Length: 320
Image 1 (cartoon, one colour):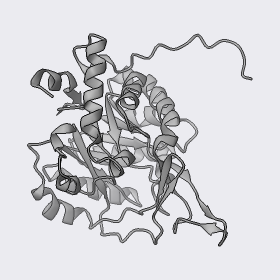
Image 2 (tube, helix red, strand yellow):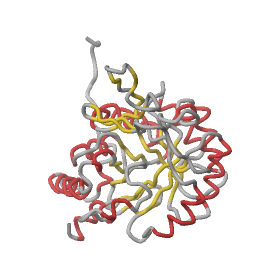
Image 3 (cartoon, rainbow, N blue to C red):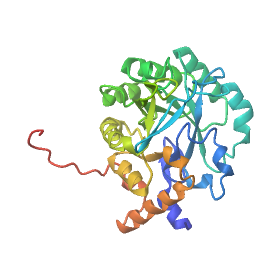
């Protein structure tokens, strides 16, 4: 793409300058260095890279099997395998090129105190922002417990807010009763942005052994199968977030420019790409080109003009 086309894609997110609205999602690109080895890949095609979920101490993760392909999706239960936050800051971050793109740490924990300590460690680092993972469905403690309870979600956000001035992006769970209420509580607690949504809880069964395929019994479902749910959740959170100028990374099943544009229309300011990277590592360049073509067709000067442009139908009548 030429310079003028790239300018169409430039996005402001929580005060950060994203060169495109695309964000590589946590858990899909390791700690940001894995995809740099793919011929033709460039970090300049994305606005930001979310690093793998990081805890205070090293974690080995869950027993195998950890990944299982499903119709139009994928189950994963990695279990937050990582070398610990101090190791990430001391040995991994110095190897990343912060001139190419923005890097966002993903904070995970089993207790409120652990989230706070991980936030402190990343606060004293060159990381551009922090994503608070309060909604991981494939660990046995923390995760879902925090993310599905608005009170606990708000407490985690407030505690992290107290120890850092870096932008905080709260990753919201779809596995809850009222995602808009949770979003409202997190805004009051000090979040700067949202990532909507995390994976849905799911299971696959081996009919011969009559046992779950995933070693953790359940895992997080991602991929195209969850896109309609993710779009609705982005729209619901946007109704609350727009009142406060809080931007959203819309994510869940994006594998084309059309998918990305749908999320922008529903209320997202940026769009997360995850599972699609496993079968097409160069998909971001294609999505960017498709977004630019759409903007040119509609005479749009900036990608922000798409955000929240959804025109709702007059939904009368009753359910059938």
